[in-house]
Image 1 (cartoon, rainbow, N blue to C red):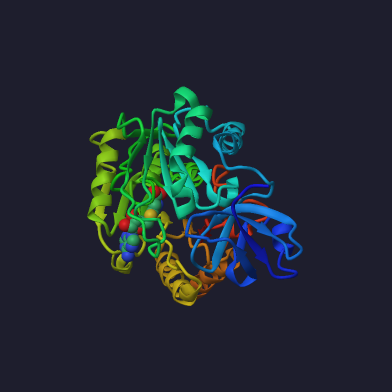
Image 2 (cartoon, helix red, strand yellow; image 1 turned 90 degrees about the vertical axis):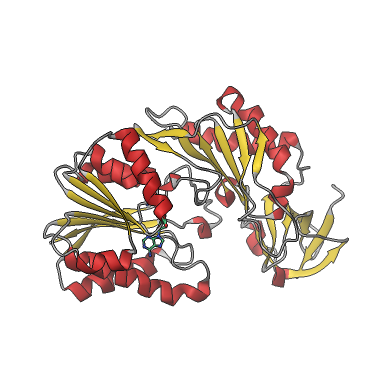
Length: 395
Ligand code: SAH
C-alpha cells in the first residue's frame, strides 16, 4: 500500500467508483486521513477501508479524479503503460499511418483513463494541456513517458496549461517546451496543410475533433456554394474546396482566425479565387444570406460551459440554426454542431427541431455525427461525450 493521504467515502458512496466512474464528488467524502493539497495524489477507500482507486485531488465539486483502479505507484513505468495504451488505440484506428495525416489526439482525458489531461500530436510536437494541477505537476514524467512510447515520432513536447489550470489553484504556470523545441508548425490532415499556432491559438491550436466530419463534408461539396460559419483555421473550408466546391465563404468573428484561414488557403490552394474570408459576427452575417448557399456549416464554440447556462445556450443554437434553415437554398445541406458538454444529444436535437419548425420547411436528418475515435468515450464515463452534429437535408 502506498503512502498517499487517504480519502474515505461515506457508506454506500463507493458504488459508482466500483463501476469505474473516475470522479469522486466532494459530497461523497466522509473524511480525509492525512493532509491534502490541490493536485496531490490520494488513494480512495470505501467506508470499510477497501481500496477503490488512486487519483489527483482538486478543489471543487469533483474532489478526486481517479487515474487507476488498481493500487499502483504513479511512476514512469505506470505512465508509460497508460501512454502505450493510448497510442495503441490511435494505431489501431489507423491514425498513426493515415495517408496525408500527421495530426491526432494522443490523450483524451477520462476517455484514455487520464482525467484532466489532453495531448494533441502535431507532426512531431505533442501539445500537453493539463486541466488539473495534479496532471500538471506530473508533466515532466508524462512527457518522458511520451518519449519512451513514441520514440523518434516525437520531437518536442509543449506545455500549454497556463490558461486551462483551475483559476483557484495558486500556482504560476508558464507555457513552454518540456522537451525539444520548435521544429515545424505545419501539419497535414487528409492532404490539407495547416499552420498550427500552439502558443497563441485556441485550445491546443487546432480542432482535431472534426476530422471525420470534415471528410464527410467534402463528399457533399461538389459544385456547391458553401458557407463555413465559425471557421477558425479554415478546416471545413478546405474540405469543401478539396471536394470541388464552386465557392466557399469562411466567417469568424476573430480577425486572427481569418488571417489563419487565409494563410492556410494560400498554402493549399494558392491563388484560388473560389475562397473568400470575412471577419464578422455569425448572427449579423446570417441576417441576410437568403438563397445564397447550398451547403452551410455551423460549428460554434461551446455556448454553455456550465449547466447554469444550458437554457440560454439552447436558445442560441435555436436562433442560429433557424437562420440557416430558413435561408439555405432548396435542397441544401446543413452541417450543424454543438461541442458543449452540458448540452446532451437530445437537447441539441430538440433545439434544431425548434429551429426547423420556425422555418416550416421539410427537414430530414441524413447523419448524426459525433467525435472521432481519437477522442474516445469511456463506457463508464458517459460525460465524455461532447461533440454532437446533425447533417440535415432542407427541401
Ligand atoms: N470549425 C472550426 C472550429 C470552430 S471553433 C474548425 O473546424 O477548426 C469556434 C470559432 O467560433 C472560433 O474561431 C471563434 O473565434 C468563433 N466565434 C466565436 N463567437 C463567434 C461569433 N459570434 N461569430 C462568429 N464567430 C465566432
